Image (cartoon, rainbow, N blue to C red; front, top):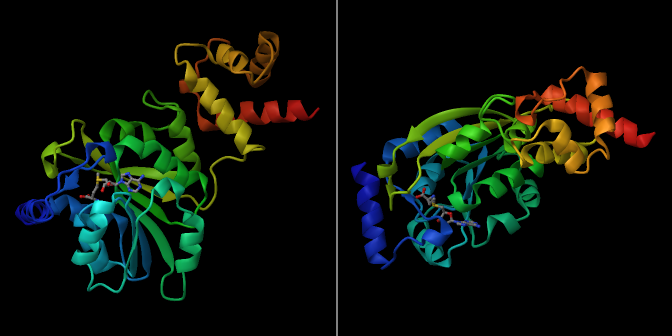
Length: 289
Ligand code: SAM
């Protein structure tokens, strides 16, 4: 831990900086954890790595040594000068001073893939205040990427990588499962950061699926159904579907449940993705007729 801890303290002093909590700045100072992230992301010379929120560059330095190219996207202007100073010797480094949520990642990846750079991967210690919108953007835009290896809050990680239909599952569980397989890489102690975050952290890896696990007749309708089903956790699925405007009456919903052999008291969080698919596809067919 010595090495990154000292470097971080030194840089904060040199540039007279303190972490901006509003931007979710918790700098990683544990070399072992950084190595584990890079290792599990399987970073190599044929890879384009997109790093979200490089901060002072603690993870970036390890990525630059291993990757074909690193494009780092950082919102905080104060970090830009530091990163330029720190990595001016690396010719495989590109820095964008932008809000990641506004970046056209599809184009960025397209423009940077070539005969030498064959795969794109996302690696980051994410700003926790926008974890979910970032992950959803990365998945929903169906980017040409192989994997997403990120540090996030443990509580969010639990939900993201839960098995659909298990106790911890939420709407986002089904979304993640639809686009990727997932695994936990490591749990990270709070003293691995400056300043220490108030929540526990975990590194997870999402491997983008080549083929979706279910055949949806309409993705938008499916995700609307999932969202509505988890909006009011204590309600039965029939009530959620009707209150959420997916079907217009309880009678209609009951007819659907009869058809699919589901109990009227079923709650959304107990259903598998296959069962949600059946419901969604049934509704899509019905609306067509
Ligand atoms: N990667 C560094 C590390 O591990 O030490 C810093 C990680 S820190 C948890 C999150 C970083 O994301 C900060 O540098 C912060 O300024 C940056 N950030 C916050 N919001 C952002 C946004 N919308 N777009 C890009 N970067 C952002």
